[in-house]
Image 1 (cartoon, rainbow, N blue to C red):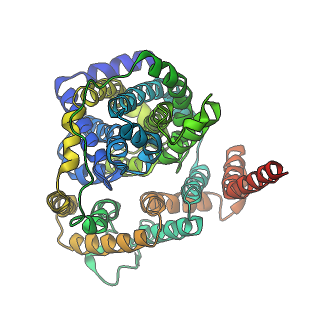
Image 2 (image 1 turned 135 degrees about the vertical axis):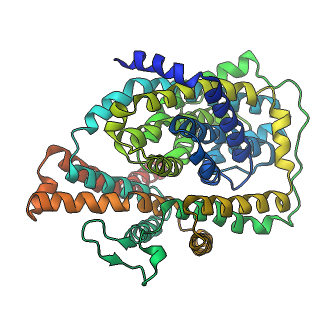
Image 3 (image 1 turned 30 degrees about the horizontal axis):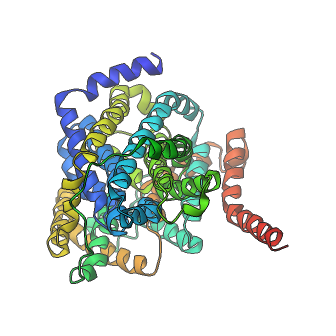
Length: 500
């Protein structure tokens, strides 16, 4: 069957009443989580992860995806109204969204953020329909050596995309070290277990995810409990935009959506990079760049369409290659594995109902979220007024319940505390968490692919440069390492020309 036939089959799954309910619930919860400062999509999915284990694979994936792109919708609410981004992907929306709010145009800012999110997510999902199968077919050409180098590229790209690149690589190494704890699957030798039987099976990467994203964020947010709340607007006029405002925004939306999708597909880039690049690109294309930072409506439309498109694009490498495109899809990939599904090219052949049900649900979810986020904006933003002393204890309780639900072991509480405190101090020291989480998830597979390729070819390392794919992946990895240096040189040359 071609993509359109598979998509029609996916709609028969996505439009089942229970699945519509799950995508609505996931989208609304994601919107609320996205609005709350500090609780981004990865934290939201991590906290709600244990709840999905009682669902079927389709319902679980649909719910997590709803939380993901729902959080992208919601992140801009706090950016626009109180200049406090819900997560990194919503930072760019605050640059013009908050000035619009101060200028009495909060209604237009809220409306264009929802409209841009809807269009960006829909366009990206259309791209996904036509690209998912070609990518999965291409992935069938990957052998053990190619997969090992793909993981090297993904980890390198994730670490190098961080502002503190050395710290990104340090976190990646820590994640790889955590993935080696437990019994070696090939030799049966215990590694780094310190004679503790509870560590013989290794450290569950989901415990690390919940600890770093949820528990760590709660610790980081304790200082907000006694802080005064910023003034919050909760009464609005008609939440919509004029024809003139649409004309100013349309080009930004349709230009930024493909850009966000492409960036989302790249491992490690994510919604933050997509939204900032879209904002800067739109500023260059704008006829009135001097208005950016002072309340330009296209300065809100561009990053909002890009970060929603990026959230869809990040699904493709996760589903087709087994390589997460963002921190949130890394959490989702962990859930897939726990549900007994192996992300990769065979997923499209063996579990096409699940994959296409998920893709179809994105169309449904975007429509539902547009309906929820425009008429109900005044109601939803009241969640921002929830006192932190009520919110964070609830999140903390959910982390302990979720951790115990993973393996029914009290020992996991110790791991939760250790990694949660570690995540808190590393975050305070500006160490990025995405490389750590991604390395924890792919570390075991990465090691096994390396050893498998090494053994198949009798210890000949030439296998890692034998195929054209291997050479391309090595070139991409080297290119990613030197990309910041090249960018710095280009920026210096531009500054020199400008000063001359």
